[in-house]
Image 1: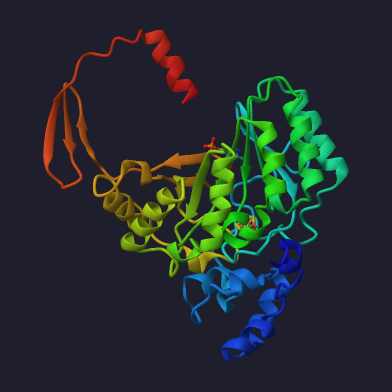
Image 2: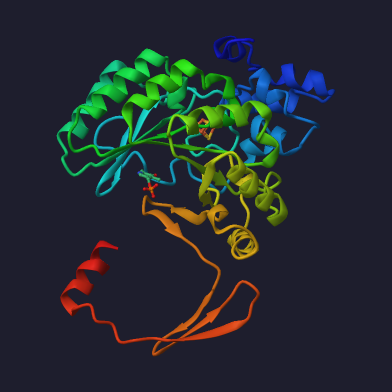
Length: 361
Ligand SMILES: *Cc1c(COP(=O)(O)O)cnc(C)c1O
Ligand code: SF4
C-alpha cells in the first residue's frame, strides 16, 4: 500500500492536470489557482465521478471564485481576536490554535481560504511556542482546539511534541483536533499516528464530511481506528450550494456518519468569505434541512445548525420555529407540524442569578 506521504506528493496542483482528464478547458481556472492554491490528491480525485459533481465542486477551482464581489476576506475577524500569531481567543475558556498551514486538499469553500497553503499563514516553531506560552499563562483556558490548515499533516513526532506540551499544562482539561484528513486523506490515519493521539486523552477529534460519497471504505477504516483508540469523533459539515443543499443528501450523510461512529456536531451556514459566495445558500434552506432531520431520523444524527457570526460574534444556533409562544402556556409545534401545549411554571431562579446567566449567555 502506498504511504500517505506518497499520495500527498502525487497531488495535482495545476488545473490542466485535472481538466485534461475530464476533457474540459483549463484556461478559465488557471487564474483562480494562481490566487487560491489548488491541491487535489489522487485519493480524493478518485472520488470524482463526473465534472461538477459534489466531490468536484469541493476540490476543483471554479471561475466564480474570482467573481465574488460580496464577501470580505476575514469576515470572522480572527485577526482581531488573535492575541498572539495563529491563536484565536474568542470565547472565555477555549482557544483555537493553528499549528499547520497545509491541508491534504484545498477545499474551494474554505473559511481560511486567504491563508491556507500560502504565505499568509506563517506557522513556525516560534509561533507554536508563542501559542503554548499564551495558553500556559492563561489559566482560564481549559479547552484547546488544534486547527490550521490541518494539524494531522504534521509529522507524528511534531504533533506528539505539541500534544505533550499541552498535556503538561494543568488547566488544559480537554484537547480537540479539527481535521479533514479522515475525509480527504484517510491513509494518514496510521497505527503509529493513533498511538500518538491516544496518549493524550481526553482528546476529541472533529472531522469534516460534507457528502455521503466521501464515506468510502478507506474513510470507514480511518474512523474505526480513531474510535477504537477511544477518541470521540464528531463531524462539522458546511452547507454548500451544489454539494449538499438537499435534505435527502444530508439525511443520508448523517445516518452514514452514525454507522461509522462519527457523531454529527455542527452544520455551518457557509461563511461570507471572499471567493466562496457561489457556495452560499439561504438560511431558509438550512432550517429546512434541520426540519427534515429532527424527529424523522435518529436524534443522535441531528447537528446544531449555526452561523458563525460575521464580526467575530461566535457561533449562533438556529432552530426551526418549534417554540410558537412562551408564557404561562408554552405553545409548541412538533416535527409533523402538529401543535402541543405545555403548562409553564413561574421561574424560580432568583433575579440576581438570572442576570448572571443572561450576561454570560
Ligand atoms: C468554533 C470555535 C471554537 C469552538 O467552539 P465550540 O462551540 O466550543 O465547538 C473556539 N474558538 C473559535 C475561535 C471558534 O471559531
Ligand atoms: S481542510 Fe479545512 S482548513 Fe484545509 S482547505 Fe479544507 S476546509 Fe480549509
